[in-house]
Amino acid sequence: MNFKNILFISLCYILASCNSVVSDTASEKVKETLAFSSNLKASLKGYIARPNSETKLLKKVYDMNKFSPFWVNERMELSNVGMEFSNLLFNSMHFGLDTMRYDAIKVRDKIKGLNENKSDISAIELDVLLTVQYFKFSNDISRGIVDTSQYHPEFGSRRFSKDLSGYLYESHIAGNVIEKLLKLQPQNNEYKKLQAGLALFLKEHALVDSSLKVHAFKKNSSEADSARTYKEAKEALVLHDYIESNQVADSVFLKGLQGFQVNHGLAPDMKVGTNTAKALSGNPFDFYKSAAVSIEKWKWVNDWEYEYIFVNIATYKLKFYKDENLVQEHKAVVGTISNKTPELDSEIEYMVAYPFWTVPKSIRNRELVPKSKKDSTYLSRNNYQLLKGGKIIEMSSVDWKNISADNFDYTVRQQGGRSNALGMIKYYFKNKHAVYFHDTPSKGKFMNDIRAYSHGCVRVDEPIKLAEYLLAREGEIFPIDSVRSAIDRRQSKTITLQNNIPVHIRYFATEGDEDDNIRFYPDIYRNEKKLQEIIFPEEEEIEV
Image 1: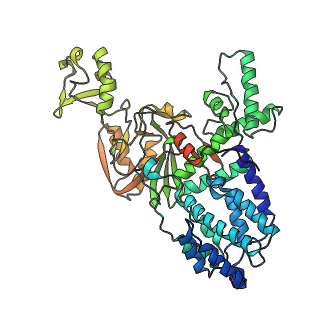
Image 2: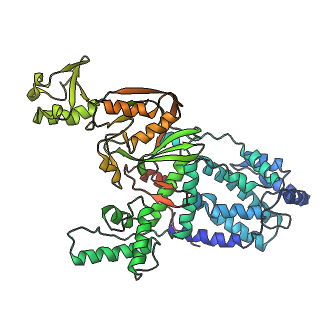
Image 3: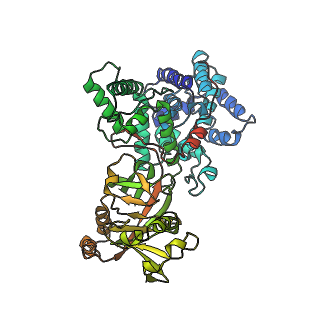
């Protein structure tokens, strides 16, 4: 979508809003249905009988409605519900959708034509056009627009079994067309917050398709460089609509910078560091497209369980949901770009206090073997053991000079303890990637804005708090003190859960919060660009 299209949407919204008064009631709709002339109904029936790609669906729904219009009233005006629906189409960006998908220019022109020429044919053409768009919009807000069999085959698409013809007719008679239409969206709490945040973002920020380069402040920067960073940051905040001009007082500038940092998942330290400078250098329209991608991907998600754990890789967060209410949240560290944390569905089956770490073959060959060839004491100094056939092997018996990844046939295991890569506790769930949740000795990483450091597993902040939640679900069977006691005694202890908890790991680069704000995060795995191109194909400029 180009900038002219965005301007066009605003014009459509103003045009449509001029006629909107109050929502139609069910009784008013029934009266309007009865009030249409037999000539108009006959004309509508004949119009729909013409060959076109939507003939079957249109004939079915209009036959249900006895060939009376859905969106136009007996006064040959767009009805209130017709006005509400056209406003939804003109504001489809609030749902991460390109307005041009819904023949917005044609809809605008047909509304204008009906206002100028209250004829049967004008009413019929507009009504049928809006009904066609209803079917398209309904599918788009419920299931998305991307062919997931091509893009995301592992998860498929959201199950959707509504008969849209019957759904439209029934909601039309009941007088709740718009309410029922919006209920076709995912009911996941994360989706709802994101969609509300996107709508608010569009009201408060102009989607300028340009950016300004901002240089990060460095400790050894000269006075001139510091002044340049300060000036660039102010201009960028104006571009992103966080301050009104670059002449505002320092206190206003710092408040705007802090707000920008919060909305981009950054520490609100009011300093233009590397990550803040990179975000300020971003394109406002690209931020919108990032949100639209996340909206689209949520439309692929089927309803999750009553209680579950959700990990968002891109936001570095692990969340507990119960009945779609957020009950607990943890910071997380995820995989690097070369060791990505995979998206998956599983369930936690057990936890291990004071665990061993059996090093995966890939890490063993890529990292530990080369280090041991250079320093034969590396493994023993870092609390590793070598095993063969289940028996511990003496390090001194290994000919490290002649060892290579190809002939190294030992299992490497790191013993439990504070230096163990898994920390004091791990959480196991089945998956083909051999990843899991665990503690870490590298606590400082949780303080960073960008937290992609692991080999693919998810490191969890406050892991004992996670254990407390899981064990509380078990009742009195396993008190949390049994976990703490095992750690204190330096003894490995496995606790098998009686009530496995579902785990869903996904990648969404934007999220909403409880106050309808939207949060943008870097696309750390750089996998969003392709989806942006599908959702927002390049278009020729449109004259308006």
